[in-house]
Image (tube, rainbow, N blue to C red; front, side, top):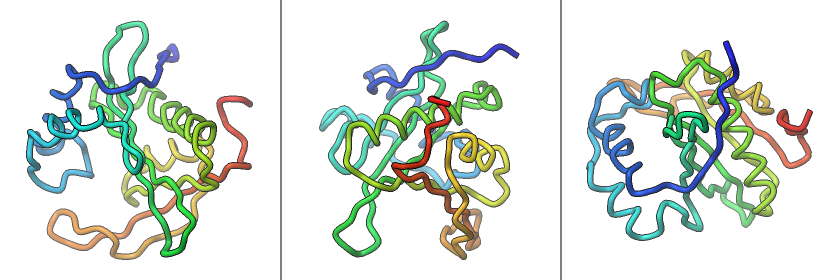
Length: 177
């Protein structure tokens, strides 16, 4: 299969429909479905800052040839209770774009962007133990598994464990190898 060329770009108004779908279509976001959400919340957030805020943001993952949004990446400022902050990133791809090598490259591109434009030392990402594809994607994007975070998420009527991955500023970018 040929590699799909992608780029990250700011959210545009026409992308809001995708965010509304993720909020209202059970299963579209995969294991991250936690129930129905306000479908107008993305519209309100876009009106405030276009999803480019100081503490949380999103960029679209666009397939260049088709000029279509395959999904989005997000990041939010976090801390461990002290003055030092780090980013926590996430990704959501539409089902038709999964399994095509887009996810790991989008996450690696996002890390390179954040390390270039912000002074953080650490970027982390969590995933579900059963999401083998995302685990492989994170490793390919330069992340290292740090461990299991026990009972960290309430999903599907029960408390579930998560896996925590990280990439630090000095880790090599897989896009520059």
